[in-house]
Length: 251
Image (tube, rainbow, N blue to C red; front, side, top):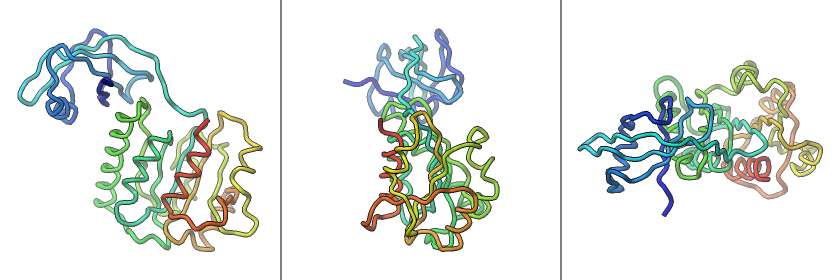
């Protein structure tokens, strides 16, 4: 049986005794774990890897563990991919965040576009971002990743393009920027990848249902995005994003 994995957003150190966060504690209660059982912990506050841990106390609502050995294990893809996507409707964004995390996405930027069906702003947008971040954490616990992708605050596409150097990450000014496009001069993604070496950073921009409008595509091209295509089939917004992500991250 696989050892349960939990994200623990504190600085982890071998030999320390800590109380687990409420969510992880509840999960362990549901799993009917007992003192002496082992877990795996990882934290975005550490420099990577994961820790062995042993349960030393089970309370009614609290669980205390002793942190054991640090294992410098990472399961990240060679390429770092920052996905920027026009938010799909209904609960499809939830599914997209989960699967993109499993595929190894580095960060996700949710965008409001002209054709977005779901409209988010203010407090509702903040709540959605926190919800998507929780989904990404749960996906990391399940798939074995120790690096939790960042879910950025929801932005308008044009504002995001104008602030691209800071809205994705300060470390990607020279990233390969590619745009999923229906334009006639779009290059197949496989052709684009033949010219790139592994260990690259990509910013992949993909639209909502119906794609980007012509002015939106034009703006993206002016900001240095190269148009690519995934073929002649019409794919759902979330399907197209995941196919491209898989091509960029799976060795």
